[in-house]
Length: 143
Image (cartoon, rainbow, N blue to C red):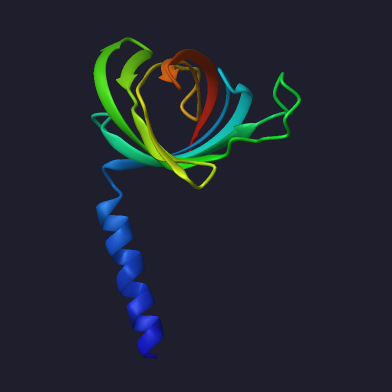
């Protein structure tokens, strides 16, 4: 009975707190100095666009040098809205996390999101990874 009451309180709190927020899943491909990388993530954003998310990315194949490193990256991203123009929104999305579970990295990135429907958006990103430029595409699903 006690667990049920706690569960109901938690569900109520989450519902009340999440009215002004949206949950978004994302899948993306990014071309970096480490090769082509795939990634996925989950982010929470307010109606104004400010948010935070969890991300993971790793290489699709082995790198050009033939080394079978996947360069996995686990981290968080912050979403800071810059401007909005119709169905397009521009964000500053810096990421911070660990590569190969050893090295802490900061990745500055900008993102241009184009709303396709109420549920789906597409985005292009540009950033700096290991002192080299990176570019990517994303598919975002607003849950």
